[in-house]
Image 1 (cartoon, rainbow, N blue to C red):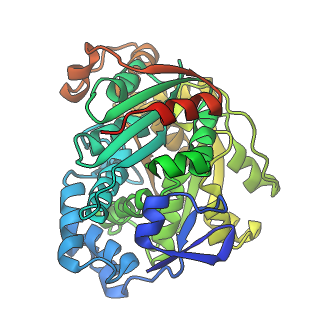
Image 2 (cartoon, one colour):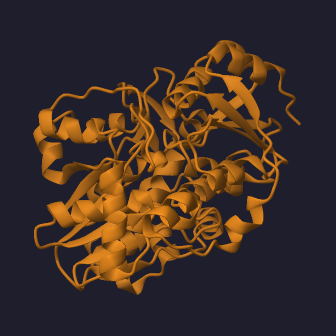
Length: 432
């Protein structure tokens, strides 16, 4: 299996190098050189396969024989061991619940698969691996849970101070062990830029064996495609035309959906649903891509002003704005519109959405044209407790997974938004 950089098709590496490097030396993101189409009989008979079997078949199709079948099955089985159910709210609108994993967010699929894959790759190495990850909310908790106590791997999580929910912060700052948290005086985009710069810094790379658990890493992207197949399996007999509305921040989730479509999943189209950080919806409307500083909202996991994975989307469609527009529509809401959407879905269906899922729901109401629409409910609403309780005027139940960390003591190192401070921290950090 070969992968190439989105900045240079001639810069090619194998899967292990792509996963362990995360970012290409030329700052590009890795994509598979070939995206194989799954056999039509497999697509037609998805309902004959379990979620784990689907995940294995998709993995095998992309990875080929680079990892022996027996080892690949173990990786899939250890990572994909919780469901991704579609809750039908009406005859033509469903919620794909991606929060049934340990951190109650969709990032669990990618984080656990990546942890298993990296553990496989370093099983015979004597080097310790340092994972750097920037989070706007849910990535940090999922990565912390996925990599916790993984031998040979230390995780350092950067998150923007005051811009994640209290429970999200507790999930990534209370585990200890091989998980360290850095509270950055800045935005998610600042955190992400510092991580990217670290990978290109020769001093750090001479001292540390660095990798990333953000969606810039192809190991995160592959498993995120699994649940599109699983969702389609659950609903495709209801209607032959299916669309997905994808709440989007760094755009890894939408990229994975487009990857699934390239592999043969007969999705009619996608909706890129965002908050006021609407860089991609604006591009879809105007053809002009203009990143901006991110703005804070109640849907904080989507507070991204320069989405990394747009480079992959651009590459998948060869920079053709019209071609991309046939498969993807844009939609966005401000905070007031998000709150109205949360109330709307609850009053109509008695269903509690988190702020991100509510934007996905509203996009279907506005843009769906008779198809069966599925919106991604990316995190359990209790992770946004204050917002949900205030908007719906109710007290929702907190799952045990969250309640257990709510009273734990936060442990985080506060750093300025400055790469040299971050570099100094890493250079002085003791790797076990």
